[in-house]
Amino acid sequence: MIADLEEVRQLSPAQRRRGGTTAWILQVVSGALLMVLLGLHIVTQHFVVKGGLRDYAQVVSYLSNPVVLAVESLFIVVLIWHAMLGLRAILLDFGFGRRGQAWITYGLTALGAVTAAYSFWLIATIAANG
Amino acid sequence: MSATTRAGRPAQRPLRGAAGWARGRHLGSVAFLTNRVTGLLLIAYLYLHLGVLYLLTEGSGSWASVLGLFKNHWFLALESLLILFILVHGLNGLRLALVGPGWAYATRGPGSRPWRGSAWASTWWWYLPCLG
View 1 (tube, rainbow over the protein chains, first blue to last red):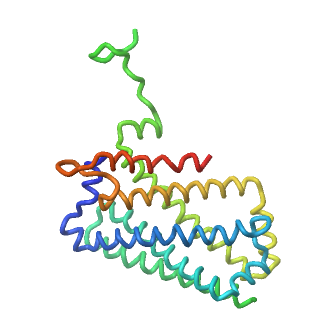
View 2 (tube, rainbow over the protein chains, first blue to last red):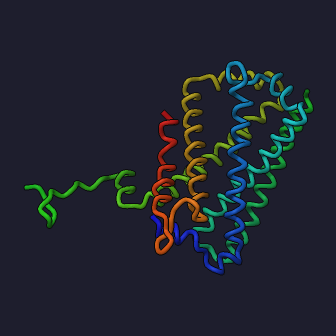
View 3 (cartoon, rainbow over the protein chains, first blue to last red):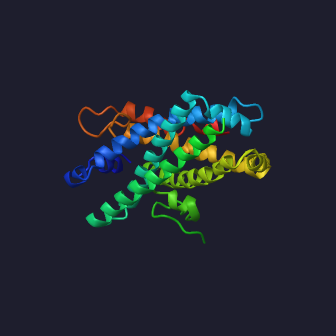
């Protein structure tokens, strides 16, 4: 196992040039943030609510709070960032060439941006009903 | 007559399926694959969740109808599975983050501290009782 881990840890110069280390650090940082933000999301959405689920009025009222809106927005950004980086790491392991890797990065950046835009529109629309 | 090894011990029957695949592989490889599979499942859930939340934009009637589905026992079982995946992915991810820079496992050679390896190896298992 240690030998396996050494292989993972020691990136080649080419991998470093492609941003392998930076992507890994960002993945770890976003993962650590997610542990806090996801925990907060689950607790506030389910654990502190009677019956475990918010009804429509409760959801609207909850999202109308600017602090909640800011935390949920941060949660969306970090979650999508982490998910797209993870998906990119999986796809890059299939051994695509440089052109293929660039397409994967551009494609996932676009997918992440569209997902984030939809999520922001969603919470803005719900909050506006309050 | 049953098959025996050179040492005269009875040969173990080969395991099939997931248990067979995992046998003989490093714990790190199994953990790595587990993290990726749970990660992909969580991404699929993210899009499903965002799709369901669209109902909130259509008013209280749509949301009330889907709340009934959320209280179904089958749905609660799937939710439990989701929490399990989140825990496995999150805690195993934390373990990988600690192992990656060498904070968790001692490296071989001079200056290695095997006690650190033993201490951190337990991080892979400690969360299991939490899931029960």
